[in-house]
Image (cartoon, rainbow, N blue to C red; front, side, top):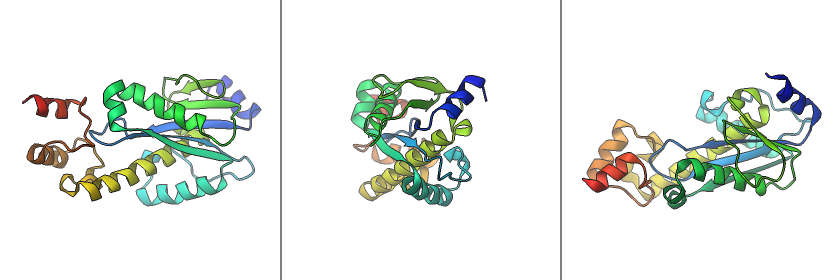
Length: 200
């Protein structure tokens, strides 16, 4: 870990970690979470949510919500994704999560290479932060579990697409169902498969 990041983590207590889930799928909102962990209640085995089983993510998500000093989950909906583009919608969801935290962080550390505007504290991006910064790992878990729950709601509303299986990603099954039924209101019209379907 680079020295200045290590100094930040050592010097400040209220560090908000921020991560997103759902940039790549063809449907549904993009989610972001911000988490300020409690140094007095460390959570063991925090890591990038993609490296955890769904069951383990759910267990850790409940622990994070119970033990963190503060946390918030926010999203940008399908309409906002189509209006703004997925990058700007993701940054908007991150901004919302940070602004709605119940306490003000000293610093905000964001997974990736882009920092949203109008954050409540100084901020920096951390490449592969979900593997380096526990608060970002925690945020990745909350964002991913929230996104998965949203996919289950979409499945209940539109069962013909199989959102419970592919979680909105462009799998063979999803593309087959899209070709069969056309897009539903949750499909992102600005994404190529849906845009191409509409143009055909």
